[in-house]
Length: 86
Image (tube, rainbow, N blue to C red; front, side):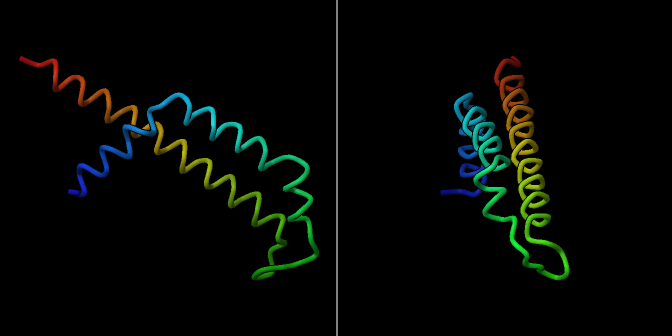
């Protein structure tokens, strides 16, 4: 499979509404009690508390997911515009 084809296939999957809902629910679950309690330990990695790393890592991951979603929407609208041109 060509890299461009794989990229477009991946971006097409991201456009699904179900994917938006799944990542939203996953974000809510990851920032609620059970997971926050799991990572609220007295452990430091490079002098940063584990909970701090978990929260900012999850936050960074959610920003990456939102970026990929918006990129897929932008790519989809470009493809539709190219297809409609005579």
